[in-house]
Image (cartoon, rainbow, N blue to C red; front, top):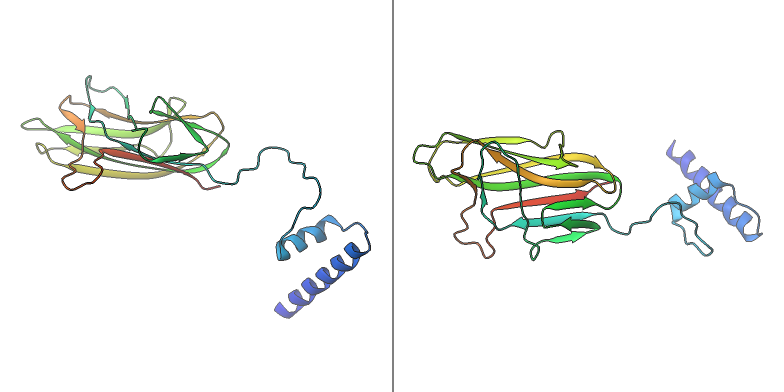
Length: 202
């Protein structure tokens, strides 16, 4: 079977080379086979409908502010430090809102430190990513905090199909005002309390 496939490929390449050398039109299906096998070099005009991107969109952001809960059961946007991390083919508005540049499928990853300063804490904290103000399915996670000043860390990964112009926010919420977004950074060269990462995958 493999020998037959190799023979057919060799015949196709020979035929394309023969036809091209005489200035004749090469059928589209043979062109596709030829390009897949050898790669193609464009020597004439290239007409494209849409946009060609030479890199995939991505962003890695760090939050260095301590996130507070001024009002319980209220969603707050996480703020990223604009001087840290990196961004490509995306926009960051007000250091809080990520604006998608073009349609695609994206991996969404975030992590956060948290603690409760109450003497006898019994609190809950939730996280999510919103798209245009609505929760992205699969992005919500929740933690219980039941020990004073315990340095707790959480990470989560999800996936979403996004469109150009979509606006994303990483948010948190709690039922106690003693809860903060905070991570101990005893030996860190660059302290941070939370991070967000988005990577276009297709």
